[in-house]
Each structure stands twice: as structure tokens, then as C-alpha cells.
Length: 321
Image (cartoon, rainbow, N blue to C red; front, side, top):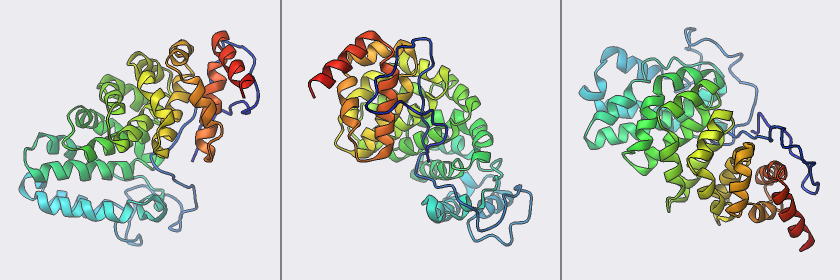
């Protein structure tokens, strides 16, 4: 789902030099989410009855437990973990998720504070609750009406989970949630205030492909906003993203080129990206079998070609075949 795309020039074109123009940008979901008609009818407010919805289409079971036991994260952590686990298991795959299919906004007021409480815990069950809550947040944030309400309530804790992750899985799911909620400009601003970029940039240097890919995806989303891409460029994201363009794991290279595409929209980033060798791997990605990475590479090259030195390097590569 490539919403928000500003079309790049064709792969074989050399765009004119217009340094004053804003560069092209691209957005992507944390997973491939196909727009489709809901089999349960039009989206309904969370206050409407949900009796006709399939099990786990909403947070009803989690909310019911929290209504009976507001301190469940301490008094009944295993029951809370089980309720969250059932919701996550039923909704893990977007194509078969009853929660995503409803299109309805979810009431996240009860679940949102739990991540901070889980992070403050010191037991194995609290660590598992952190992971499960972040997986639930990723699922909920697939839906547009959930992104701002969820992000505004959870971003301080999500950024804390990134900075001191209880596990690699928690760090990866925190980055995926950031990717989704940062479709909202207000969430990007809040993520920047709470220091999201530093741990994301550090994750790019991980030896774990999943951490690299999810961090690059979150940076791509943050960098769709002007303040986000300026902050990411200032944090040195480009230097760590460029080596990932040639990564042997396709999903790592795909996320990296998406992030480079958006970072290159900032005219200040063009020289640094050229200097760390971004142009040659971007040209190679024009021949990628997948449409998404190819489109991102073309968009990034369009952005870089606003600089004479970058255009000269492109012409040398073209002449060399």
C-alpha cells in the first residue's frame, strides 16, 4: 500500500535541475495492508454494540478484564497476557485480521497506559507483556482512525521501549508501531520530542536483519515530514542506511531504500548521501524485481539529481553501462 506517493521521474530520465523544488517522498505500511471493503459494514464508532462482530475483532476481552481488575498488570498479569495473546493471534496477519476488517476506531484508553507499567516491571511476565502490548499496538495502528489516539497516549512509552528494549522482539515491534502512528504529523513531532531517532539509528547498525528493517521503516515514516527528515539526517541515519541498500535480505534493502528516498528530499542531504556512495546502489536497485524498491530508488535518484555533482556521477554510471 503506497499511499502518499509523489511520483518519481522514470528510471531512464535525467530530471532537470531545480534545487528549489521539494523532493519526492514515499510512504509504506509496517506490513502490506490491502484496502478492501469491510464484510462487517461501514466503520462504526467504538461506542456502538459489537455483538455481531467475530471474536477478537475488538479489545472487548482485554477491556472487560481491566474493568474488573484495573490493576491486572500486577494482580493478574498472566490472565492479561492471555487475553492480549488471543487478540494478537487472531489479528497478526492483516489479510485475515477481524480487527482490521471492521475499519472501526478502537477505544484504546484502557490498554494505552499498560506499556509504561509493563516497562516498569522487573519480571519475565512483564517482559512478555511488553512484547505483546507492542504487537497489539502495531495491529491497532494499522487503522487510520486509531493512529492519533493511540500515538498520543503511548509514544513516550514506545520511545522508552526503543531506548531500553526488554527484548529484540520488543524493539522491532516498537519500531513497527512508530512506522504506523507516524503517518500523523503530530505523532512525528511527539516521537522526535521523546528521542525516537537515536535508538532507531542505532538499530540500523545491528547485526539482526529484522531490527535493521523495522528501524529503516520507522525512519522512512518519520522522514515523510520535513522536521522528521531533517532530524534523521542530523542524526546520521543516511550513513548507516546506504550500506543496507545492497543487503542480501530483500526486506532490509527495501526498507532502506524507502528511507533513503525520503531523506534525500532534504536538499541538505544530497551531498552527504553522494559522498557515502548512495548513487551506485540506487542505480542497481532500478533493476529490482519488486516495484516498491525500484520506485523508491528512482525517486531517490530524482532527488539526488538536483545537485550537479550527483548528476555528473549518474552520467558517468550511465556511460559505463
